[in-house]
Length: 277
Length: 340
Image (cartoon, rainbow over all chains, first blue to last red; front, top):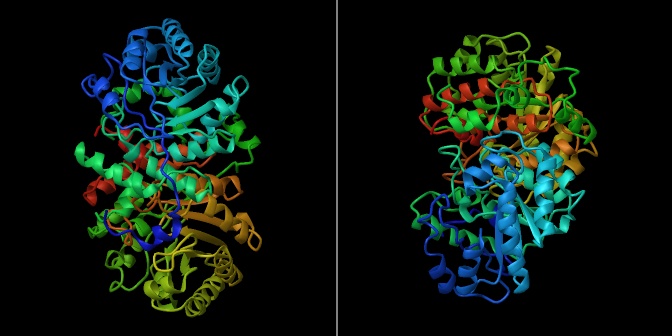
């Protein structure tokens, strides 16, 4: 793995158990990169399911849901948006139409005791519409929560949010949905992700989405970064004394593995600082 | 500035750009938009002073030696962005810091814009006199909260360094020249690891007591987190008022903006940063260093905090210096805004 500076060893405890939620793909045809997720069934069937780890998959419609269940999925997610334009361009239907589809999926999932998570993208801004009102985010979140999603992940899809807009949005959503049912999904396109996550934690949110190595760029800003890096998130949470159960070094190793596989340098600053360049 | 990607044009209306992402001068005093109301009711300061350290701390850590003319042009560009404090250079021996060998020429060559201050580093009396001769009207001294770092970085113990700084600061005060004090390794040391908040307070008090008007607390290797920042500031603020404190965060582990946010929440309203996140980390090869001024401004704008700084002009200065040192910017805002 390379030399770890003593400063890092000083700052990070070694006693962690590995326990993660793994996001292994979705069954969406026509996703931004359909080729990447085309092997959803093989991946779902091929992974080793460790005890204590949950493996949700994205299922945008009933067909995808049935394929997912057939492939062994035991948890699903649906992906809505707080912006009409984004909804139409991303999944080819209005917010209302998408909610009707998701309702079918979520109800079927609940009948089978399969938990369903709801995503709301563009929660802090939209690449087409610009500003998104907190009220709109609350409206869409309520819809998903009401149909039976156990958790709503609020996504800053293009990373334009700041601690200011995050606070205003969460204050609004939390009037209708308890913080224990909320998560934040921050993109680091403008370097704001960890500050935004910190504010969410301060407001009582305790579920955070992230991607190892900060995998994935931003399709709306060429050359820009995307997901917040799991390593950098863990580093901050460790420093705050918050329990995650996750072993930072093992995450860094997984990050190193996947970066080599996709032939790119990591987007994680912790990884950059820790490996010999 | 380069082409603005269509996604950015779509993403941000120009009304919104002007209101939320551009802060042109101080023309919005008294205007209460929802963002500003938030800052006033949330306990955050109304105004944040950004101390731009790119020309000194940033360039000091860049391998490419930048020609004097380029440095002067760079600083002149920064002077037109609304930044009120720009750290120009360091009057240190060129043997130690070759990048700063042209300190006198740079100091004499820059255009001094009204309303902008141009502090310089002066580690000892000799450097101080050269700085004054070259026209400096504000100086800074650079201590450390770690004995090992002090010995390795400036070849003397903390106590010895304080004695030298005392000479400098007293001379400066006699001439009515303000002096700023830096405390490096405030959240961790590359040699000693953990640094206690008490040690940071002790060194800060020493500098404040000898007459430094402001103490900049530096997370030199970027290992700090909001947790350690809070603990350190709580300790220092028992002895030094927040109005006399600043934070100087490095982004080596991606923690800088979160750490700065916590400092703001605790009442600190002076933040150091470097345009484009100039300057790597000499202690972690390949890692980044200073927090990028552009990313900092983006956050402060989003919080409704007044900085007086025009983000786009800062991005242009960043683009200029990145081309000069032949590297890509470390600012995520710049990366997202320019065509890659």
